[in-house]
Length: 305
Length: 238
Image (cartoon, rainbow over all chains, first blue to last red; front, top):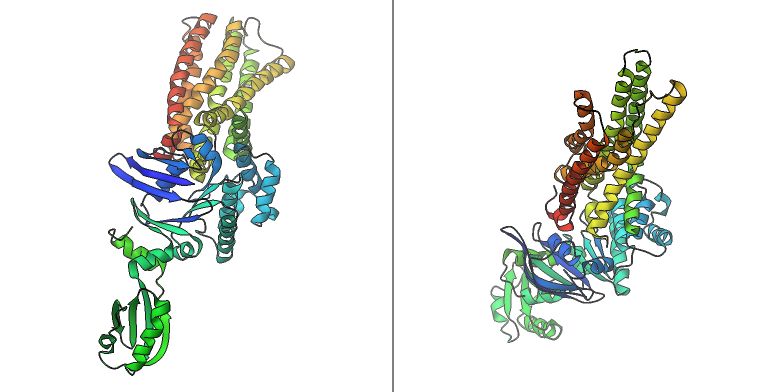
């Protein structure tokens, strides 16, 4: 659905995006993660045919940026960082205006559909400026989806929303995934990205890493089993001596053991520890959060890609 | 064309809810009509040859200032308002072309300016004829009519072009309005010519001013359209 080949954008001497190679599949929720100023918004702007790349090429929904910009804009929906609503227009007038610009065949019906979906129907005649922050964000998302785009670029869709409204948005993203819509999601909420995204790209002017969140974690940290012991003997971690154990670390009464196939290796490991006289309290898999991965990779851009 | 009208109607809907624009669009023409009527009324009592015509022609000047002043607030808000609300990017993300967007916004200012100018000119003539004994003979000459109907669109276009250029760099509607007010100056040219008494306002002068305004408007609009490109708006506008 989205293919970029060496996409780059410079503003004078400043490089905002460098040599970006990406492939996003149809129906995929793709997380685009990076710090402020990393070039995420510039990337979205290039892919939404709002600004031209300095070099490189890209296709969006099969259309070439720079050559079929108007068609691209017809096929994508963009939620910008700020809701950007017309505060002096009512909620429904905001949607009708955009529905007409996108050439939606039944603007009134479509506006009603999305207002109801986001539970804003009762507030349809209220000026957008009088709506709460959460309502404005929902209205902006409705606006981005109004013309049923194949690809949605969502820049911080849950920023500033209360937990309930954020959940509505997340559920909506899940629903869109089942409808084969492609979602390009920029977020600082890494827990949200971990839960929602099929794949994530970590980006800081250049692509740092891309893959499924779990895959990336395994690639960077491997798979680790945590074993809590009761008063373990000194040096027990060195006595394990099993060929499949890659690394063993001990922190107080806890062992962290790196393995490649814990499903098969854990029983052998536990037997070995019992053999060594250890009393086992708990055995868990060490779950690394996307946040840990993000912070480690951003700190060291030489991480695997 | 469809998208231009969508922009146009949206601009008007927003303008109707903006007190600053409404005040300018309603109060200013009424004030000008009142002032012009008062001037003609005062001339009635003066028994100096040519005095009544002079006052009437000065009153007509107001209707050359209106087409330049009325669009200022609408055009300034139309750009600065979008900036303040952060609504430019979602708007630019639609399939609308840069030119359609520009024309929609420009016409949203020019059309009301012309309707209000010509409407208030009609009101002025009506009040003068019905309530203060008519128009002095030889006062409303073809050059003046040509100026009011022929120069008004050009004055409005020039004013809108200047305002859009200024607004692209400004972040405050009032500041943009004040700087753009300089666009009124070409509307005062006939008054300067008339009051300096070098010559009477004639068709040749109106034609020359029309050509100068056409050239000036074309230049200003050329740059305004150039500034009004997606890339420029998203990367250069403040």
